[in-house]
Length: 126
Image 1 (cartoon, rainbow, N blue to C red):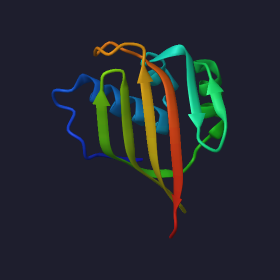
Image 2: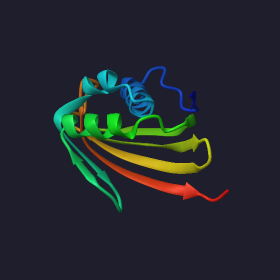
Image 3: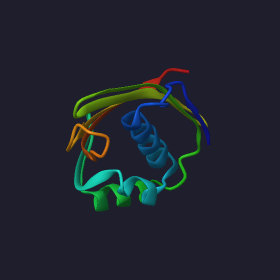
């Protein structure tokens, strides 16, 4: 999988955390994301399922299997206090989606962990 991050995370630890979190989830690296979120994480897919807890998220990611993701492009990473957002494009073998994930953290400092995520996923016509 090719990873493109158009956002500079140089002097922004929260942006680097979100970049790493997005890459870990997309690549199915369960061990990498578990240290970045609280155990009772809530993840809402708008128009779809709600996942509660790292165990359920882990199960969901592992059950997806290989998704044939060709590229993850992170276009913007925006942070402010205890909230943040990441948007970009996911290119699969035969389809493309634009996404926006809105995050909430348990703390505003660089050591905060993800507590809630709301994801918007929109198919892009070919």
